[in-house]
Image (spheres, rainbow, N blue to C red):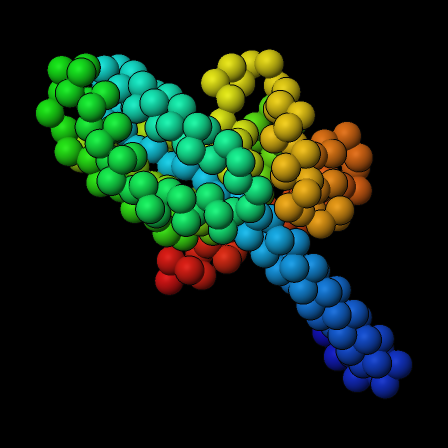
Length: 221
């Protein structure tokens, strides 16, 4: 024990430890700054959809998907000439009542009498993959649709640019959607969300995930 204490008291050892701590702190600060820039770029370029089912029953889950499909059809027709997230949000805000009416119409057609609560805000999202595009966990602006008690499983997607394709098994996002996403993101951000084959890019994505989850926890507290 005395040898360890003596070793720790050595000026060279102290300097080495201090330099190591400073290096770790520097790397952490650089990583955090990098994440803040890229995460802000991604979250500021997409507008997402969050549909929550009344419950986890088979009937309620099927209803959730039918509501989703109708909302997406309307969104796609509404935003056909939209080129930015801000335009998409403004349009959805202006037609919020229509979104609610469409959801209610589907619910009633399917024989249910659930209410619908629709909000536009900043919400927590987990990491999600849409074919060959992946978005890290974090806080994103979205249209949230709560059906009935809203105690069932969630469904997430991206309304702008539209990544809400139904047949996710194909694993391919339409080129028009990817081009629009690329136009709204920096080159670095687009590479991170679209290139799943590069080891360095994968590592950067993991860093975004780590800090994104931390930011979500901070926001909750």
